[in-house]
Length: 374
Ligand SMILES: Cc1cc2nc3c(=O)[nH]c(=O)nc-3n(C[C@H](O)[C@H](O)[C@H](O)COP(=O)(O)OP(=O)(O)OC[C@H]3O[C@@H](n4cnc5c(N)ncnc54)[C@H](O)[C@@H]3O)c2cc1C
Image (cartoon, rainbow, N blue to C red; front, side, top):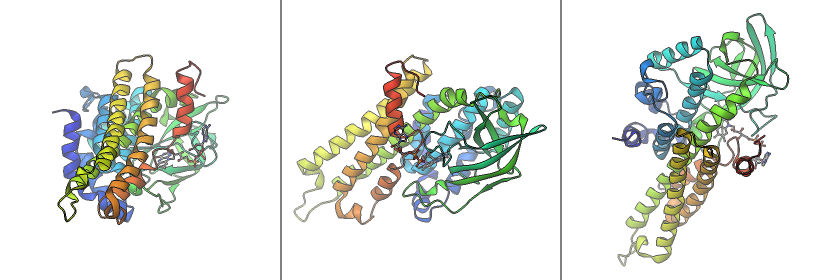
């Protein structure tokens, strides 16, 4: 069975049952994550010889897509865990890798990203934090914004200015770090309501120098060479999965909704055209994500352009698919009888998550003309 089918079976069993509650109550998908933590999906990217599944970017995106089809929030939070983990696995010291792999494999710990800041917004690779030296510690001060899985993950990747002029460092910050506090209950997102994305306040937060990932000043290299492919392709997966849910729900509604004459919506040509358009949108998004990750796994030269393109396609597709889904869904969808309204709200996050769809579009133009992205 493919990893996608395994993840779909898992999602139907453990994610579907709590997706409504996560949205309505704006609570982190605790039950779904309790199961994810017990499963092998948590260790997807960890090499086999270290107790993981030893899989790569293609499977990462497939699982994100499969989970997001049931609940975009769960798919997104899972995606962040994998991204943070791959940074540790590919750029961490041997000691850090050993320690974190052990904690993920044996203690089932979750990771997350705390990169964005209010002052630099979608340009999260620029940090306004203050970083002071204190012996074998770094004291980090400032605010990170919209930290998904806040308080739920055991570790957060934090970018901060480096001692190397003009550069940034990438820190692995434990949840229990002295001086770290989350401003809980401040997430009022239109969608992705279970993300609990809130501010992280760092007040001379004491981080051991051994928790710096890689060399001093290497943060930007991590962001563009490791975070970017897994994160941007991961979001393509998440929003493709959300689009698949929209399509499935709209097709089912078109078949089930019948007039007194016995005619279903699906028999009306205009509805058939809407459904065909939705299918094309979703299919192109799924195919673009698959091709981008195939290209990345093969180390092809244009993989970056394909990844950027896949995420742009997915984010724009899902908003348009949601618009069509709401139209075909009619009064029932508008009256929140099914999930379409929630799916549409979730869809709107895709275009603004850093780097936003607009920034990615500019980057794509640069990538295909051989210019540096930033
Ligand atoms: C659901 C959700 C979850 C999130 N989770 C996390 C998380 O876990 N960790 C984390 O670090 N962050 C997270 N974020 C934050 C996110 O990644 C962005 O940093 C944040 O949404 C940027 O918001 P902003 O309003 O400051 O954007 P701004 O920087 O103000 O940008 C707003 C818009 O301006 C335009 N724009 C700005 N600059 C350019 C440019 N150079 N070229 C073209 N257009 C431009 C774009 O249209 C952009 O969408 C999350 C956000 C959301 C919505």
